[in-house]
Image (cartoon, rainbow, N blue to C red; front, side, top):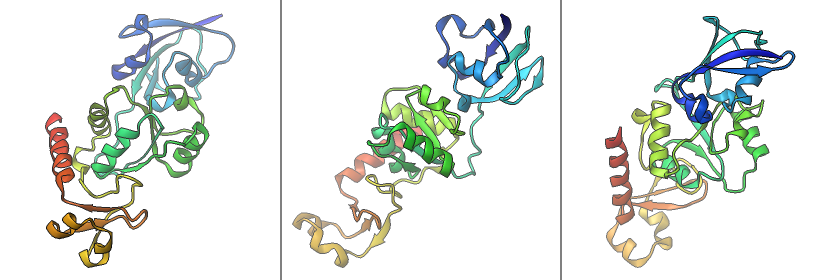
Length: 236
């Protein structure tokens, strides 16, 4: 039986058992074990890990842990705010998906995606997988992922924006809330036959989703969503 000492920094403590938080603690293991395997056995997915130091030297996930090693584990620092970020969300985060689309973020979501489909999408398309399922993030094929800590959808949105430095990327009313398509301006005459009489009478500017054909205009729902986005920005 071998033993190494681990210390997890900052928000990685959210994923640990209470007795392991904000302290160094020993972990026992048998045989040849990669540092990735041991970190995940302690409850921290590899997608959450940004830097691993062993005896002060950086190591990758394949490093074979030695008896007596001192392992420091740091979280991913996030993504540069000037880089485009695309997301895919699991079926527990439907409300967050709508809020992210409302904010203009490229967000794939369907409530019938299973774990295999989610892993395939994030692997093949390079999307960041957001989930409330820690075990899902431990799948080998998933390179980019984050365990959403908050349970309230509005706080979840703020959390994701902070995590990936995306407040400057907010572009409200750019994407379809239903399918994630990029909205386009459409002339009223083209969609007048689909409008209710009062909508046709009082509104003149419209957008349409080219994918699912959903129509949007600046009704009372627009004011509510605009107020929501303003509140999110104020939380920053």
